[in-house]
Every structure is written in structure tokens, then in C-alpha cells.
Length: 164
Image 1: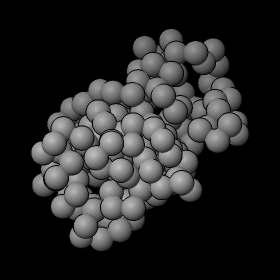
Image 2: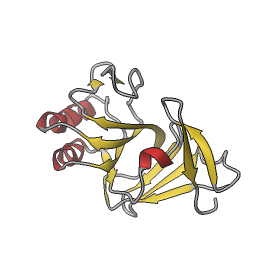
Image 3: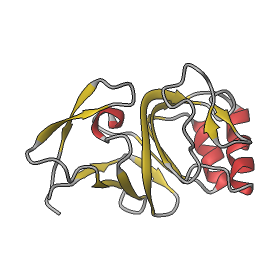
Image 4: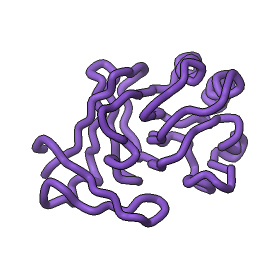
């Protein structure tokens, strides 16, 4: 079986493994989430209605300012936070919030992670090696490329490397 392995330029936090919620969308803890119910709540967000608690979020970019930073810490204090957040690009304020909240974070990949990681895949993040592995979800692939639907139903090509 093949597995997808990606390397980030930036990583921090603990090694974690969980289901990935993937969307080509931004992330603001203040405007995108219902922090009391633990779901994405902004109607225009591609993950609206889905629970983020204990999941690895794979999103395009961080949005927002200082409120997002302290909100991540507050969410973690109530066990209502994502397990990790993976971005194509991130801002310093959200990095500070993830560090304060003890939330694993990765960012800075050579390719668009929202296009490569299948929504719902089992993902393992190891910040010590700056590696992200798709452990399950990639197993369905029989070749080096396969169509995978995105949350909005459109197909995406996923490239697999390595052997598991």
C-alpha cells in the first residue's frame, strides 16, 4: 500500500494522529466556529456543521487577529479544540495562539495540502520530523494518482509517495 508523506517548513507541538477535516478555506477561531458546540458555524465555510473537536484541520490559511489566538487557548482549556491545525500559510498571531493552547500546528508545504490530503483521512503529524503522513485514505489508491472528492464534491488528484 502507498502512503502520502508531506514535509512542512514549520512545525510545533506534540505528535498526533486523528481524522482530517480538509477544505480549501481559511480559518478564524472567532468567525468560523461555534466554540460552545464545537462545530464550524459560518454558513459560507466549506466545513459548516462539522465538529472540529479532536480532529486535524487541514486548511488553506489562517485569518483573524488576536482574538483567534486567545480563543484557541480558551477552547483547549474546555477540551473543545482541534487536535492540530495544518495550513498552507499561517500568520504569527495564530501560531502564538496554537502555542499558548498547546495545539499542534504545521505550515509551509511545497504543494497545496488541501488538494493532496483526502477529506476524512487518518493523518499522523510528527512535528519533530516536520512530517505529515496520510495513514488511511491513501490505502484505496492502486496507482500513483487517484481522484478523490473534496468536501464540495469536486474531484481532486492525489499523488502518493513511499511504500507502506
